[in-house]
Image 1: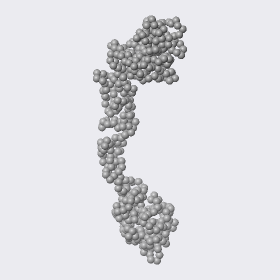
Image 2: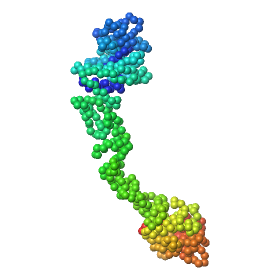
Image 3: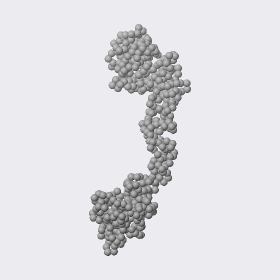
Image 4: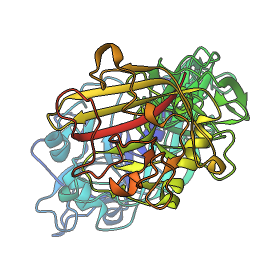
Length: 535
């Protein structure tokens, strides 16, 4: 048996007071029929006193002329009957009560169950365990020191003494309740003491390090093959043993540790791994946005948005507003909804529009009506600024429509649903209006296509929008139509680009003048949406 075996036992005993060979100073034991000694060498001593000694020191005190080690009866305070223990009376004449003993022949098995360790087992003159119940009574009647000694096959002898030792009763499962304070050590070599979170074992290839968990590390002192190492499931982090999960996740390709909860991006930014509960979760869908670059900045490698863009690198959006909904569609989102835009020639702050991303996407909505909840019979300033709710009924505003239609070439599409729930559309391949100085004249209108004009070969969308070509916009308080005898918009509760005659518009009063002339089926409308998209 090697010196390292003893070191391991000593380190282990700090946590588990079950001993291979230990002795108690001032100790007391209790007799039990499960532990008998039939050895002819057994030394028995029968006292004449009416009181049994409580431990082996009292055996020595009651009979000082006897200093022969052997088996004696003791009876700790509170224990019912006396029992046999082995007393070491020759060890500096201090009277040590043996609580556990093992010898080279190994005739007694120590791999036993709870009840066996509670009752005790073996032969006091050879190998035995005193029993946890007796042990508890014994160590709770006085203050005891604990002495552990071992003799190796080469004759080397080691002794370690602790100055305080006590365990609890069976209700507390015989817990070690008095801290072991190391008092002294003797022997041929110094004893290696392991810290509380380490065990004694093979150190030549028995240690894993947090920083390199795949490599078997040699942590032995010079000339040794055993030493203090982390137990199974623990790795070294500095001078401490920590649970494997606290080390994070090791990426062998890069030879790095990803901390728990952290992420790592590979060198090509084509894969993202996240450390969770000590395991790597791989996201192979990670890819940089077209407006991003894979780079290492500080200690972090990932996708970074280019200048003028912001985002997480996987998705980057321009820090400058989109100019219309097609710009939103290409740069930011393909989902219909309200977005902020700023046309190139718009001098004010960005403004909200509804972007319709259906029918190819990128449609900037100028007008929508769905239920008649918004009054469209309004004045010039309202139509100049715009009104309503972008997610419901609204007019975007002529000043905004002017800026939009003058930054690019746009086509315009008007979708309608009549009150028979039939859908139709009219589309013109060019649409533009002038500024307020021209009173928002419909200065550009292209060729018609669609289903909203039922006149067959004569269908040209004239009665939808064509009649307003080159005409200024009219409202109830600003008459710009070509009719001299009366004010069309005021008479028909509407606002639109009108020539000399009234032809129903999508801005007419919802209850009766919300119509389109020559619409197949009923001309009365239920829904309308007017929108533009770059050509």
